Amino acid sequence: MKVLYCTSEASPFAATGGLAEVSGSLPQALRLRLIGCRVVMPLYEDIPQELKDGMKFLTSLSVPVAWRRQYCGVFETHVGGVIFYLIDNQYYFKRHGLYGHYDDAERFAFFSRAALEMLPYLDFKPDIIHCNDWQTALVPVYYSLFYAGKDWYSGIKTVFTIHNIQYQGKYGKELIEDVLGIPKESTSLLEYGDCVNLMKGGIESANRVTTVSPTYAQELMDPWYAYGLEGILRERKWKISGILNGIDVKVYNPETDEYLYENYTKDDISGKTANKLELQSRLNLVRDAKVPLVGMVTRMVPHKGMDLIKESLDRMMQETNIQFVILGSGDWEYENFFKEIQQRYSGRLCSCFGFIPELSHKIYAAADIFLMPSRTEPCGLAQMIALRYGTIPVVRETGGLKDSVTDSGDGKGNGFTFQTYNSGDLIYALQRALKGYENEEGWQVLIQRAMECNFSWGHSANEYIRLYRDLLKNG
Image (tube, rainbow, N blue to C red):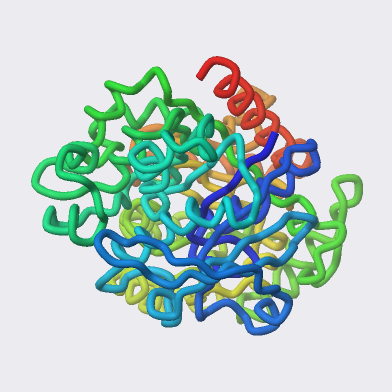
C-alpha cells in the first residue's frame, strides 16, 4: 500500500503546533509497518539551511492556479527512512512565517494542486492521499473535480483529518473562480453561509474524515465544539471516525533525554527529584524537593483553559502549598497576567515565555503535577508527554484528554479529571491531586502507572492502516 501524506508543516522542517509532530512521526510509524508512506509539504523560507542543504532537486513543472500557471520545483530528502517532497515556489513560500499572509488561500491552493500535479513526474501513484486541516483541504476537492476521471489518477482514495476545527480556512466568495479555480457548477462544495470554507470542502469531498481522538469525533456533532460545521458533520457522520494521536517515544524518553539534568526510569525515579531541584534553582524558585511543583507547557489562548487559570491561580497559590511554572506564549492579556502574578508570588511562581524545547522537556520531567484545564482539546500531546515522564496530569474531560487520562479515584487511573468547565471544579481536582501527593507510597505507584502508559505511534498507525484497508476494499 502506498500513501501520500499532505501537510502544511512537519518536524523537523517547520512547526507551529501538534500537526508538525504528527506529520513527522506518523509516516515513520506507517513505514515500520511496511506501508510506503511519503510526505509532501511546502519548501518554506523558515526551514533551517542545514536541512535545505540535504535536499535534492528532482524536477520542475507548471501548476495551474485558477486561470494562471505557476512554477513548481520539487525537492526530495529523507528523514527517519521516510521520503519527503518539498514544493518550491519563491513567490508563495520565500517569506517568513508559515501562515497569516494576505494570500494564504492562494498559497495553499497552489500547494494542493502541486501535490497532485507532481505525482506523474515522480512516477509515484499512491493508493491513499491523506490530507490534514484546512491548508490541504483542497486536495480532495481538486482530485474529485479534475483528476479522478484521468486514467493515471483513477482509483486513488482520499482521507481528510481535522486536527482543530476552529481553523477552517474561511475566505470571501470572490476567490472561488479567480483564485481557487473552482468551476461555477461546483461552487457549492466550498460555499458555506456567506463565505468560502476550505475545511467544509475537504469534509464534503474526501472519502473518509478522521479526527485526532474518538471523543473529539463525537464532540464535533455538537455546536459547542464544531464552530458552525456541525450540520455538515452530522450529515456525513457515516464517514467520520476518531483515532488518537501518539507521541514520539524516542524524543520523549526520560531514560535518554539529553535535555534533562538527570535521566531516570520507571523502576528508579530518583532522577526526577534531581530534575526538580535543578529546575527550581534555574527558575529562582525556593529549592525544596517536598513542595509539589505544578507545571504547564501550553499556548496561552482561551481554548487551552487560560481563563480558568486566570480566575483560579490566586486562590490556588493562597490556599495550597504549591510552586507553579508555566511555559508558553499567546494572547497578550494572558502573558500580561502571568508577568504580573509572578511578581506577587516570588520564589513560588515562574512564568516563562516563548517556544523553548529544552525547557519544556525539563518541566515535563521536574514537575509533580501537570495542568491541562482545556475548554476544547482535539487530542493534546502534552498530557501524554507528561505521563511519559511520570508527571501526573490534572485535566478536563474533553477530546483527547478524556481518551488518554482516567481518574485515579478508582485506584486504576493515571491522573485526576474534572468535567464541568469552571474554576471551582478545576481547583477541587487539583486539591485531590495534592492529597494524593501527600501519600508518598501511593504517589510512587501512580508515577509508575503513568510511566507504563503506552502512547507510541504504533497503536495509532495500526488504526490508520485498518482505515486505509477498509477504504480500499469497500470504497
